[in-house]
Amino acid sequence: MKQQTKDITSPPDLKGHDLGTGPIRQQRPVYVDLLPPCNNDCPAGENIQAWLALAQAGENEAAWQVIMQDNPMPAVMGRVCYHPCEDGCNRTFIDSPVSIHAIERFLGDEALRKNWQVKFDKKPGGKRVLVIGAGPSGLSAAYHLTRLGHRVEVYEAGPVAGGMMHFGIPAYRLPRNMLDQEVRRIEKMGVKIILARKVENVLEEQKAGSFDAVFIAVGAHLSRKIDIPGRDAEKILDAIGFLKQVEQGETPKIGRKVAIYGGGNTAMDAARTAKRMGASEATIIYRRDRKHMTAHDFEAQEAIEEGVKINWLRTIKAMDEDTFTVEVMRLVDGRPVGTGQFETLEADTLILAVGQDTDTGFLKKVPGIGFKEDGTVIVGPDMMTGCEGVFAGGDMVPSERSVTVAIGHGKKAARYIDGFLRGTPYQKPSKHPVVGYERLHLWYKTNAPQKEQAILPVEKRVEGFDEIKAGLSKEEALFESQRCLSCGNCFECDGCYGACPEDAIIKLGPGNGYQYNFDRCTGCAICYEQCPCHAIEMIPEPKNIDL
Image (tube, rainbow, N blue to C red; front, side):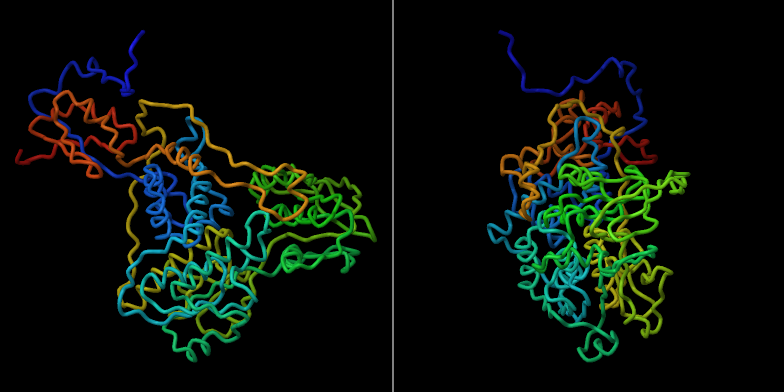
């Protein structure tokens, strides 16, 4: 029986180096740190690779602590984030991306189950900051400002904290107990959240509370209106209002057949909620095709699985008592253009999901604050408005609207607010170059596809608002984290150490990496070729160096 070896490292191709490097070394290897695409693509700025490495080692609490340096709500984010980090994952070129969001959810849920507490050292000399709005951006800013040593109060106009996470995301995607627990943890850190406190005059509130700075994050809670000829106001609901009614335990009268106008995530949520509220038919009307819809594809797919119909390339032109006239559209350079062909659809209710606006009227009197044509607030690179000491973020500023982006805004604003208050402006650190798949030297390629999360059968999903997706088990989370390729950063695989023909590499011990003995190194680049994650670069031999 042939003996199997545990060494899966490909032997170096010494034939490719048979000419040697000559009497004088022309190049030398150096260990580098590059930026993995997952880190680069995370709107919240998480150090994903760092906490994945800890999760790989089974150090789950330490991994969670690393997440908490950037994101205060991993149990929430592991559920609602659209995970652009996975879109960039280099593992996609082998089998499938690492399920980063699922591992984050596992760690977030473990923290709540085991009551892990955030470890941080407050900076001395903190000041008072007012945060207006307890949505994802406001809560994130409050959390990070507290970590930075400041005393924070949050004024929230609504009856509960969470903003659109509470009223805009259905419970089947985000169980409220998970959201509530993560909010309470922020409060336990010292953040004071005052509910049912609507701010009408920012500067007066700032003066009355002796706040040294203000962060405004009131979100986009106003549904846009459109003009539909012959419209019956009683038959038309706005999506945000509809979702809010359901969340509050009310039962909106929607009838058997419901039409939803729009193609974003809110339209998908409204349609799926309508099914759960008893509608036999829920039909989305969207003027573009699936390729150009603003909703994430997995949201549309789940909606379709649950029986939601989608009429692509259609726009509503008029409505009668129980019918809608729609025009068939075609795309010209990605823009919908009418064809003059019309259809009639039956519906008892129309739910409008054509976008949201921010109620920024209370800011009109604040000197220096400027606005875009769509009503969003203009901020600088430091998130400060035109009024000194007043910052803004989240859905109310020009940006992509998502929970993840909002949380990133809160962290970013907190750092600039801290710099403003301390008189030492925050300087954003430079980024390392991003390492793409083409730069990896993988001598191993295992077929280990992503662990899929279990999902409720369709017939069970539409019966109520129970969470439809299960989390990973401890074993599954460990397996999934071990699929990470550690792109751009050494994980001490010993590939370079074992391949070096000159024994020029010195091991420094676990966690400390390696160093070169340049008295032995010939610059042959075998170590570079053997490094799977591109943590080694070859550079020209320095001139006039004392070797």
